[in-house]
Image (tube, rainbow, N blue to C red; front, side, top):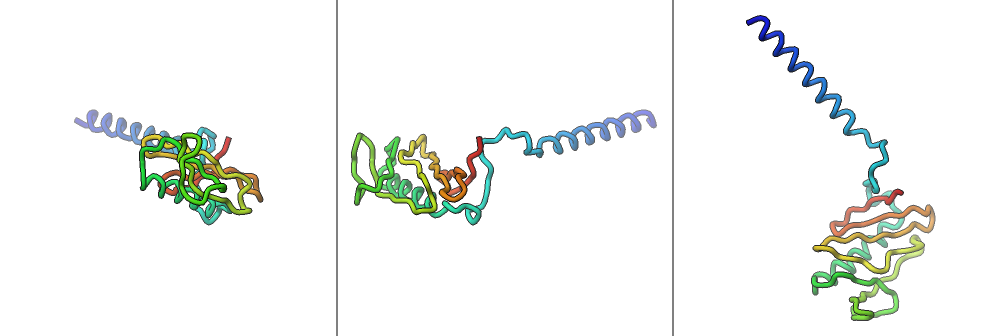
Length: 136
């Protein structure tokens, strides 16, 4: 009986040590395996540009969610169909050097990229409004 308790206790201790070790290793984000790093929008100088672009796409999809691509363009005054795409009005601020022009929608999911004019960093917003930094 003592031997069974001892081996069971030893087995549990080894299992817990192994589980702790795996947990510690799995939370190490320094491996560089991720393409994006989550951040808050207050750290992002192009957050407003991204949020406005997302709103333009979201509003267009609310009207007609059958589009596979939507183009953001400053040369239209109202949503219109050009080049076989739905084109919606959008202009970005001086904080951005670039905002992705054509947004591809797959099963309701999409992302929009923007480059910061000041830092050169690329940021991305998804359909839910989550902003992340794009890293290579």
